[in-house]
Amino acid sequence: MNDYDDIDFFQGRELVADPYPYFDWLRSQCPVTREPHHDVYMVTGFAEVKSVFNDTKRFSSASAVTGPFPGFPVPLVGDDVSDLIEEHRDSLPFSDQLPTMDPPEHTAHRGLLMRLLTPKRLRENEAFMWRLVDQQLDEVLPMGTCEFVSEFAGPFALLVVAELLGVPESEYETFRQELQGGKQKEGMSIGSTDDQVMGHSPLEFLYERFTGYIEERRLHPKDDVLTDLATATFPDGSLPEVIDVVRVASNLFGAGQETTVRLLAYAVQVLAEDPELQARLRAEPELIPNFIEEALRMESPVKGEFRLSRVCAEIGEVEVPPGTTVMLVNGAANRDPAVFDDPNRFDMERPNARQHLAFGFGAHVCPGASLARAEARISLERLLERTSNIEISDEHHGPPGDRDYSYAPTFILRGLTRLHVTLTPAD
Image 1: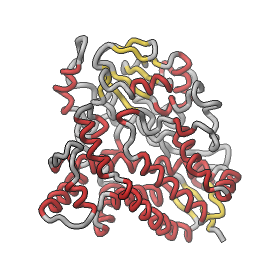
Image 2 (image 1 turned 180 degrees about the vertical axis):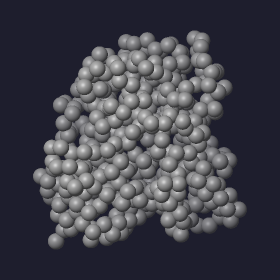
Image 3 (image 1 turned 45 degrees about the vertical axis):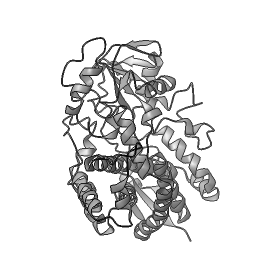
Image 4 (image 1 turned 90 degrees about the vertical axis):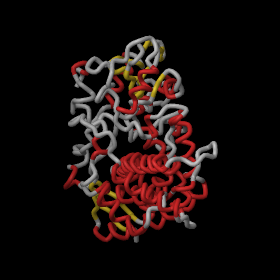
């Protein structure tokens, strides 16, 4: 495939299975390239992506998760479109979520989130992860086979965040059914190549639940995590409105799960395709953290995110007009040969693997990065410890050298939709 000019990255299906040759082609032309179908400036160079992440004054995050769809509600014309963005940003999908906010609102709400993700709370949550991994392995190992995405990674990521935020254990199953049982699928449609129609908020269930939790704990505080959540303050000491806390909690729930599931699935896919790599990590588990960083670099769970230029701005040496949609292609930047030697090769001992931009950069760097790393480390360490072999199911994915994998059909997310593996328990 080399007629990339004719391919619509945002609405076509041709690049879903493997977007990386297209990203390389874009970068070979220029680290900042205007694609012809939707007038999006694609930023694929590592240095150029970082520069925009760092520039919150000239680039707005209002369209961070929507990009060119559904478009801005009014024409963005003028030398400085900041006022137009602020006037109409609330009509954009997901405008009440942290990734789409700009300073100073973003600064305050991110500060609130970080007051919830305290080192003490994360340590307590990590202890829960070890117990949860063993519980799930107790279920899947006797069967010898596992559809890893739905039977391990999905439930694990959901319950980790549920415990972190203090959801009562009696409601875990309700959350699983609502968020993973087919009733609440809107969040999965972000950036879909099949359907560009998105609701304003895909998180109604979470909003309803957490509103009830917060209101009840403010009236009747207890010595528990939900009370900590309900009484957390903004960095200036003021108590947020209930809806502000609900939005922060819901964002952590929605964003953290999807990306963690994709990370875990890719990591296990790599292990299952390489018995020698498995054996080495079993013998040297101290290498697992860097293995995870390389997995994040090679297959960033988020292909990219978007910005709107407020004024005429230069990215690299390319002039970008006011009101332009810019895509920061993390998945391309993480394979920039100017930063990573032999970038398309998986090297778990790569010395600069952690330089990747899988979690973004700057003011919007993923606040749950440490949580995701812990989830991956604990899952992989225990999975390797309790198995002697992990293999891809030939029955479901075809033989080695001719595998058939299915990927999420979106222009934002990158990851397997299914991963069937066979698991041999350790002696």
